[in-house]
Image (cartoon, rainbow, N blue to C red; front, side, top):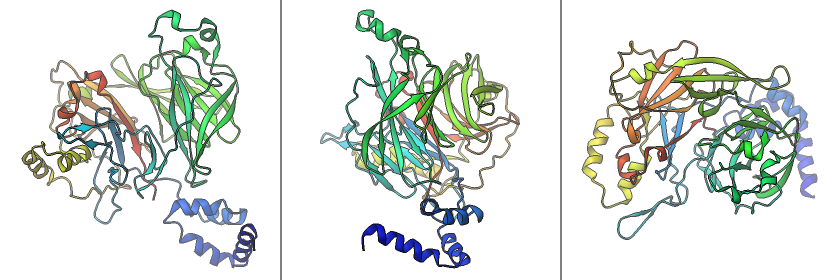
Length: 470
């Protein structure tokens, strides 16, 4: 029997099962949403049972926040330990190839760092891998194709973005999307005709990797609506360009002044311009009502929500939030959330020059607030109220960054630090009640030994909410 005929034979056999028996079989897959999602795509009858019985839980548990600092070889996981018996989730990527090569003289070669580039529904995108930390499964991305002239202009590079829907398929896609670099060069290095052309082009050819075929292929997307502007107008500095997968579309903040919405089922795209007063370093994320955009504007935190109910996208201002309570907080915080300190423990185990006595003292200090194994409560993520915040104490400088949105509640996570990320603390800001919750320190142990004298602007935090998928 041919394999295809064999598959049809198996389906025919399954179709003879009584509906209650088939329902019970499918219910046993509920503990593994990935396989239940695959079963949902087998046939209409199976999909009807899975949807009718609400077997597939589409909401992945919110565990914490992955934090990548550019000078560290590994991402850190910032989260609250769970009660005993909960599934253990760690941010450690020890099952991958070593990110750091220890040199004979005790130094390190950091060029293979596992900095997180993006995330989507339980998967994280690294430079060379797509990884599921919860199951420790990973795929190594093949060599990238050469960027051709079809979708590139001079002085541009490609960023990569991950799209994955665990309720539809076990396969994912990685998109390479050009980023136009600011005009930092002399005028004679730019083509005036190219700079005056519209961007993005009406017919946009992107390189897309599919885990289904394990290959990179060119894919054409046709623009609906107007371009963002000319190439010259689009060249704006952008530090943090993120993406969000939502309702079958990939929303990519691929330039500082607009978001691109890619319809993956129709191979079409359209441009959504950011609000005129979007502020600096806008953060695109997913929360309770869909897509949210947050940025710092005039010493406030501005949050907008995308509204597509009228058939076209527009940004609706939710509120401008006072940052003085964050600046005023002056307590020493030891939890309830804990940074896993992956980098410090890696260095301790590999390098002979580390002061192990300092590590022992550090571990004793944390013993009272965290278990040896990092287990997080993925369901009970309510926050407790703090006492009234004390009046602001004077400090010459505070560095504040957006860590991300809670995926299911209108809460935004922030960090506040002194120069070079000293005393960095994580906060949860409730967008409806305006309450502030201090979560704990996000400053890696002995982080100063990793910074190599870099200026503060080189120590940016890249962070992503993490929802593990088993």
